[in-house]
Image (cartoon, rainbow over all chains, first blue to last red; front, side, top):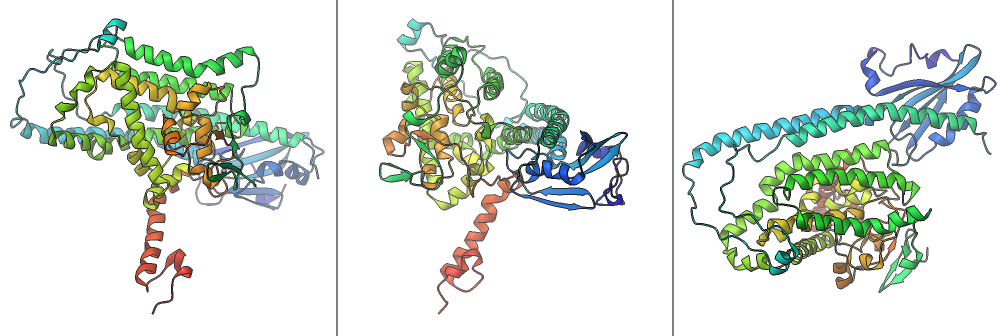
Length: 223
Length: 337
């Protein structure tokens, strides 16, 4: 293999000064799939070519390394999650492997999404607190409407069918503490959901990628 | 492509659209699958109505509706997995995560803004200005009648707002991003520019004084009917249902890449509004989207109306008043005197 391609341990980097040994696992996926030792690199690339040759994808092959970039891939693009990456063939013991080193905008954004929604939850809390401080001044001026409200009745058909009667509007409800008009709960729950989606995607997408690469490599090139 | 004449229009001249119920796909598979995907829609509709009709007051509250909605969405996602309508609409991890983002934005940030400028605020202002007690006789009507009125009145508003979006350029700019979706899945209804989601949510049903239970029943009809607008599930929908209710078949025609087809099936729940106003096309489509199926990512969806509005506004000013830079429309300008 070419020195320009780097290895899995010392990959070629776009920004050579930037070294993020562990944290980049958030958005980078590295791995390998086994290859028939008799298969040449160009044959392997030819076999995975249909997987990559989709609208909005630029590909170059230089020094035995296949590099691709995707610009807003289609929803059904099999590699839509991995917007750019490199692949190369490497000898491993008696056999050979196709190694890949891919970058995913989607995984990175999904990882960051909980922060955004935690931010919205904090915003809800802040607005509630701000409005509560303003309301205290206005509360004294508020008029109390003590006029008894008329209780609503169900239509006879609904009474016959047994629908529960509406609540008496004059019945005193438990005076709950006013929590403000915005709820932060949704923000917290969604932050948790995105954390779960990220973890699922970080496992699922590399799994599907390896499966698709193996399937593509097993398929002879049809001309 | 030749297309098919529907009324005075040719549907399917630009992109493939199947017209006519006799030509659409059917549920394939064994008797169990046939049974489930034939009866699922009506059974769920009547189950939801029965639940909200008989649920005791302590249970018939908004938080129950939210919990049911969540479980319902998960169930529909499972159905998409089990019996997809088209393989080309299969949900992927990335599409799912993207859809959840739009839904989540609607539940958090947009809801906060809506509290100040949405229909709730408008209704409050209007209700304060008039004596709406005159409408209190509504609450004496049978519950289901109230629910159907709420649902139909709201959908009538949506129909005209939606039709307006397809016919008036400034409104279209807000709605266009939603038409860049290239497949229909359960949560795709939330995909779009936030301004559009705000506009389409403006309802007039809230002006009238209905019983709370009637609102919950109307919500149940929406949840078990209009939810199927965006879904990748093959159903054998009953003929009576698709005559009065909107379906994914209707809505896939609306999302087709065929221009004339998109100018049909505007309603959300009650397709009879389209039948009454002459915009209904019965059929289905698989190839969806704009610009040949270009996917619009989240960033572009957020800025699209502003970017295009700015560009076209600039061009319009240049055309109208002469001089200046005409932007994209400059070549068509009359030479300045």
